[in-house]
Picture 1 (tube, rainbow, N blue to C red):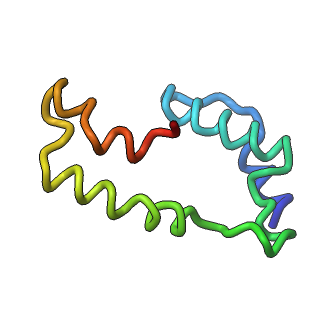
Picture 2: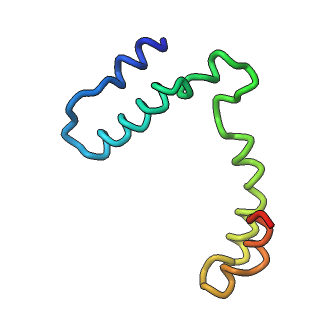
Length: 85
């Protein structure tokens, strides 16, 4: 599987610049060995689901309070909860 992924990420001309950038980014991670690292290391989760769930409460609270609608509220209490001190 790793060989197949590497084969598909090989350098080749692309007509669309967005596709080319995506191919280059994925290829860079593949070259470093980090693209499919989760297959070899069971301690690495294959998705970022846990991180997304950890942020969910704060994102919902921000949305409900319209906290990011203007500059004054953007600097309010929600920002201090999400940003490191």
